Image 1 (tube, rainbow, N blue to C red):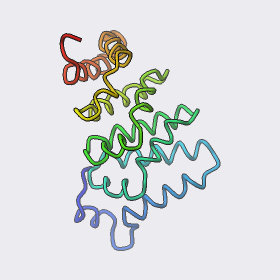
Image 2 (image 1 turned 135 degrees about the vertical axis):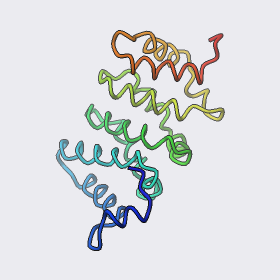
Image 3 (image 1 turned 90 degrees about the horizontal axis):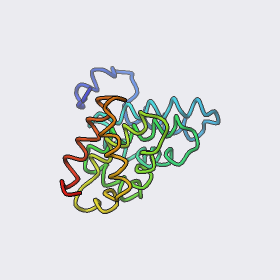
Image 4 (image 1 turned 135 degrees about the horizontal axis):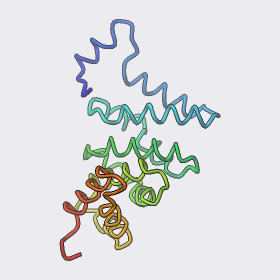
Amino acid sequence: MFTNSQRQEERTGKYGTPRVEYLQQLVTQFQNASSEETKEKIVANLANFAYDPYNFTFLRQLNVIELFLDCLTEPNEKLVEFGIGGICNACADPANAALVTQNDGIPLIVQCLSSPVRSTVNYALGALYYLCNASNKEKILKPEVIDAIKSYAAASEVSTSFSNLAQAFLDKHVPQAY
């Protein structure tokens, strides 16, 4: 976890595949995959790489953030879940967050708040928590979005961690008078 170049070299070994090449292989496999199950596995794998700051530059270089955003438009709920998971993992980084915003990702993420898959909603809440700032809060803090997040904050009987994340969003981004 949280790799640096020296640690990555030690883990990869003399004959291992450098990280950027491995990620490129995953992207190429995704692009060439015809099976939904294969695509799901690859996006899940890429999403796991998206939590580590060591990979952020590679993910941007290989357009993986855009791949995650494309997954949000798919009818396959697993692709949506893994895509939003990757976005949530990556957008803690300001450069990745800016890329999500520049590629019109906010409406796609907001749409994930109404998913029947709880982890998709959870990832969307986390992503919006990181993305909401002075330059884009008008895109996020719409009444219907705030109402949805308030309902999640009130649903502590469903999941305490889920409710706490929604409440953390409200505490950080929504004025008390709202």
